Amino acid sequence: MTDKDARCAIITGSATGVGAAVALDLAARGYKVLINYNKSEAEAEQTRAAVVDAGGEAIVVQGDVADDAACRAMVEAAMSAWGRIDVLINNAGMTAFSGVDNWDALDNAVFARIYDVNVVGAFQMVRAAREALRANGSGSIVNVSSIAGSLGVGSSVPYIASKGAMNSLTLHLARQLAPEIRVNAVCPGLITSRWFRDGLGEEGFQKVKSGYESAVPLQRSCTPEDVSDAIVWFATAAPVITGELLLMDGGKHLG
Image 1: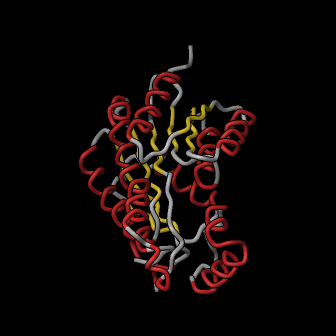
Image 2: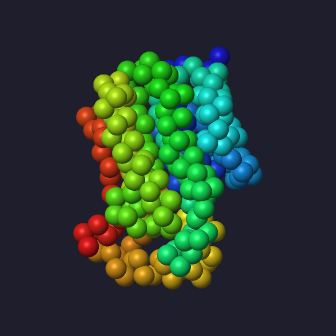
Image 3: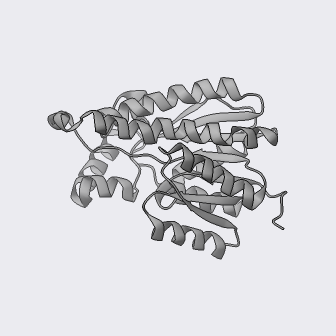
């Protein structure tokens, strides 16, 4: 029988990047973690292996958060394995790298898909997990948003709009789910992860990174580990904080 006293977390989109970093950080703190992926099966298994090698316990569950049945299946898998859920990290996300010169590529289908993953998916995960999170009396949800939703800058119009929606969703959920569940969001700027490199290409990524770091006061980008530190703090060590949107942008919001 699995130890029912150990705390447990679901991390969506956790095969690579920020999600993988969070899985490793929470496992190091004794959490059992559900690693979720949509397409990156090999990377998800690598992350699970890294958790196990570090002495943790993890399961891998495939599922697209835009599919409500997949969200419910993730919750059922965690409950079946461990009998409880203490933390939900809504990290799964997507964009279309499309600047002002390419707005014609942003049709209804692109908008709908980005919203389905970034906003509807997060809500569906919360809806599926809320009773399990509430049952422990101290559940925590952390949404991985972006400065795009606060500053109106980012990789594409639908991405910017979706992160604005996620920020509003975070505030609403913080009110509705208190006092048993805290809900916060991290809002990173540029992250030095594969996600940006895949979208921009290595040359494009390095150009954007150089421009970003020369413009912001702290002259640095976020690493996945930087973002994970903030997520884990919200999840495990901030008992009187809810409804917070934490900007992690090296000071970009200062202008």
